[in-house]
Length: 369
Image 1 (tube, one colour):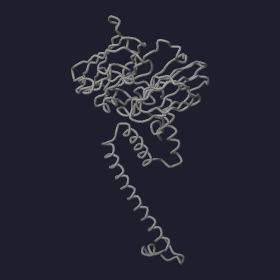
Image 2 (cartoon, rainbow, N blue to C red):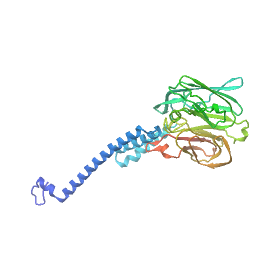
Image 3 (cartoon, rainbow, N blue to C red):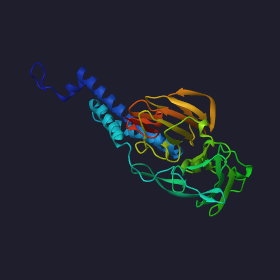
């Protein structure tokens, strides 16, 4: 480097120039800031690990999405391409839907008929369950399904449900919303002895009140129901004219703990779409088996809400978003008037979408000509 008088400048002269001092101070500030950011990142990582150690699986899933986004940001390419990378992740998820996974829940369980009694058998056991492509988790379920099989009877039927426990802890089965004798209510140490490992218990009753109901564990239930010990119990009315007519029917069971945010035991893009022809009406039975509320929102078409917890409403109402609290069941009719693939998701957005795209409680209603 040379000075204006063409004399060689000494190294000490560089340090003493005003411009150089400002540069060094600025560089020092950047270096210090980098150190602070590094320390913050380390602290955040430690805090995240500590938090995840006590978090529910659903909260852990949300934290994993946040951590992945933080990691991507730390190693991101220049800002001009960040949005392109995000778009590609969102696009990949959409193109994968509906993704194939092993296992399917809510398969109709056909009864045996013995002396006029409809007999169903449920086996509680542990198994691996693929929630999303390549993501297998331990499940506790009935008959190797999450949710458990659909049990469907008619008002007035005599019903017998035999439950076999192959778990390594006790359980009990509560028929949620069903009117039955007290000793059949399924609450261990209140209405019955627990179903201990290696034993069985028989529930027997007459199906009295028609509607959308559920069955699930009522013993260590936060863990057992969260991991998959739940299923739909439908009592059809003798007089079907009391319900609105429908061409097709779907059950959507919401859960948010053992396998994260799921619809019928799967997370997007492994959730299954609802399909209909233009002009058809579909009935959707919502059931919330989770720990959180889930406002389910359908794009493009309204929902006619006509029943709550199995009881028909005196005045049905229209909406596009229906809030479903834990334990609630809601029945709706959707008049499929608009052709296209319509997003259908929980509107607590942290249950459905992140920087990496859609996940969890997302599906679609596909209406074709």
